[in-house]
Image (cartoon, rainbow, N blue to C red; front, side, top):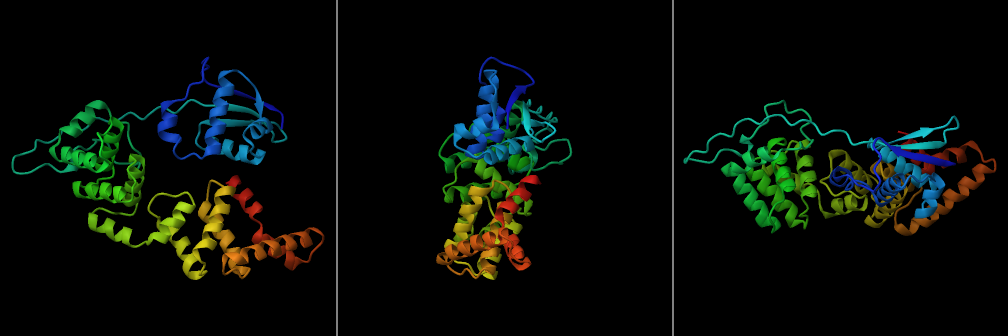
Length: 349
């Protein structure tokens, strides 16, 4: 591929990284995606040209790795790719961040009587509760109103005790989001923070992800949250971690893991090996990708980790025979084990 032009909407004579990139995009991106995006910013700022192959050489990646990272940022709407008639990349347009949504006015905070504290959800936006899993950009006035509520003050105090630090304004916004948008009660927030701290997870971004996962699964009480956590043993979370997931498993993710452990009957080290190959191969659709590997191993008669090498050798032998004119049965076998083809299909979605 030839050199490409990198440009953005507004040129500045320095390498500037937006705070929104750090706050909203950096956590979810992997090392390759971060390196390549930051390198593009650097090249654009210096008005230098580069190419897909140059980027691959600089970071010791393949050109496929570079394209995968660029397509990831294109899906995040932080850049757009331009192509020639041969589908070669000729330009990379670094795009401005979309403007933050306007935050609606807040309803007045009710007066707390001496008889009892107002509920934590007393600060409610006047607007509808659409997009309830997206954290608004609360203003300082809204934060002050939130902190003035007695029940809120208790939750913030308890959270600071669990985390052993004073909460930053952004962390207070997260607690407000969990209370206001997700509708968590004071008791449920207390249990949420304790649940995460007990697992040595004190980062507020992790706590927010767990809260969203619970909300999506209809959790509204500490008892329901405890029952959900009790559904999965440590091995499930170990598999989640092996695939780069740190949240509570969704129903779909749990179904995959049950299929691997119960239906296929694989030992943990076999599943971890499939997870390792998946993480090295793709950043998206990892459960589907790992499932295709494990299903192929199951059909190939793999029972222990020591059987994987033989399955790999049989696959390579089958592929060689097919490429030299094998029969239709061998062609079918190859298609069942062709992970490169699966990766191509995933990237094209």
